Length: 250
Image (cartoon, rainbow, N blue to C red; front, side, top):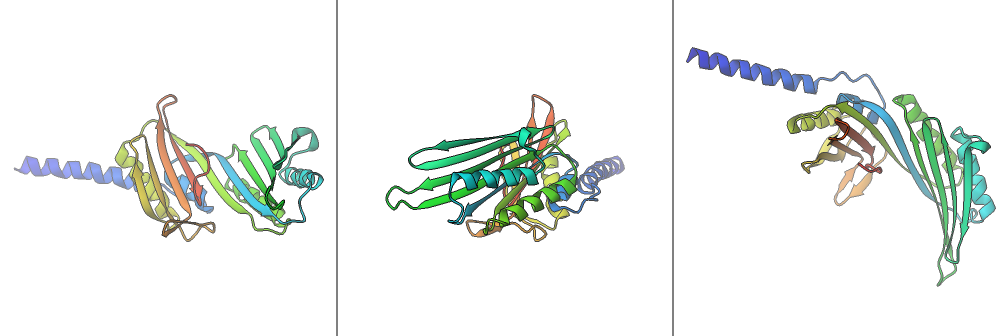
């Protein structure tokens, strides 16, 4: 009996040791998504920012669209020889698309002017997709501020979604995935309202008061979305964290 009790005690100690390790990854970062990523034990490999807005009526011709895109590209650190702008004019809409890529960052900007055939009214939308391979939280913060500030110049309020992508070497057990995702929510004071175990990936959705952006999903207000999945081809467990939701493929 004594040996059985000792055996049970050792098993419990091993389990508590494992849980303690999973739940106590030191978090030293302050930007919420970066802190959440750090809490999972993964490091940010790249970040993505998607921003869009509806432009007011005063911005509705091709020359203005091109100037808007040039201003955005300049603000994001691209020179004129580093990007291309394409104009596609049709009977129902006009698309002005800019694309730039240097070293470790890429940006795609699109302005779409849609013409309603019945009323001949125009609606114009601006969208920006930005990606940079960097683990620096300051770059994430600064890029969001740059985009938000320049888009506000067009007298509208942009909607911004931010995603971080990182990875851990090897494959985690399912229970460890859950622990690390919970750690990430805890690190930013968040509460997961929906948890999905899809076998090939784990997904947590919820709300964190430390994050400004938010959307309404059904009856819930959400602003934090996390996914962990294993890629058998490169032997890595990828961690994707987005706010208010994940806007990239996973």
